[in-house]
Image 1 (cartoon, rainbow, N blue to C red):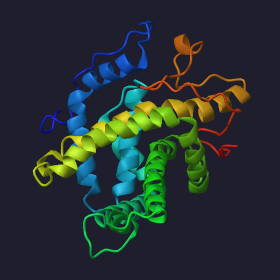
Image 2 (cartoon, one colour):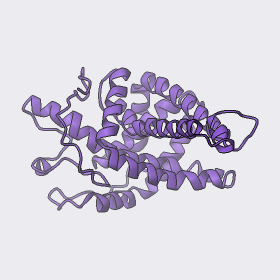
Image 3 (cartoon, helix red, strand yellow):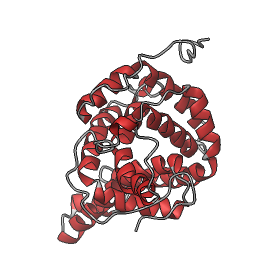
Length: 285
C-alpha cells in the first residue's frame, strides 16, 4: 500500500548482485544516491514532521541517521518502520543531544549575527570594528571550535543508533574520530556548507524546500563518510578481538577494507581503538 506515494511497501527495489564488483566510494555514493533519490523526499518529510515538537529534534535525527546507515550498508528496510523503531529506542539519548545541539546552534548563530549587528558586542563584532590581534584570535578560535563541534556530530548520531555506549563515551569517541577522519570530515563539511549557505542566503524563499530536500541529503552524505570510520576504528577491532567477522560486511568483502569514504582518508595508521557494537562497549582508547 502506498500513502501519498511515500510509503510503498509492495514495490521491490533494484537489488544488488552478490558478487558485483565494488565501485570506488565516489561512484558508489552516486549510485546509492540515485537509487534512493525519491526516498530522500519522503524521509525528509517524515523527519520534519517528527521535529515539529522541537524537543524531538534529537531522536528524529538519530532515527534518520539509522535509516541512512541501512542505506549505506545496502540493507533492505521499510523506511518508516525503521525510522519509528530507532526513534523510540534511542529517544532518551537523542533528546539530551538534541537539547545540546539546539543550544549550540542558537549560540553560534547569535555569535555570527554579532558580526552584522553593532548593538551586540561580542568577539565577532569587535573583531570586525577593531581588528586587534586578540580579537582576531578569539574570532578564529570561536569559528574553529564551532566547526569542530559540528564535525563531531558526524560521529555522535551514528554511534547512538549503532552502538550501546554512554553519552560520555560517545562524545569522547567522536572527538577522537573527528581527528582520525579529518580529511573526509572536511569534505563532508564543505559539501554541507555548499547546500546550507544558499538555503540561508535565499531564506525565506527556500523555506518551501525544507520539508522535502536538505536534511535527508546532508544526513546521507554524513553517514556515508563517517560510518566507515566508526567501522574501521570501533566495530571491526571489536569483532577481531573476539576472532569473529563483522556481520555488517558481506562475506565476499571480508578480505577487503570495510568501506572507503566518499573522500579517501589516507590517515588512520594510529594505534587500534576498540569498542563494542550494540553491547556494553568500551570507550575509544
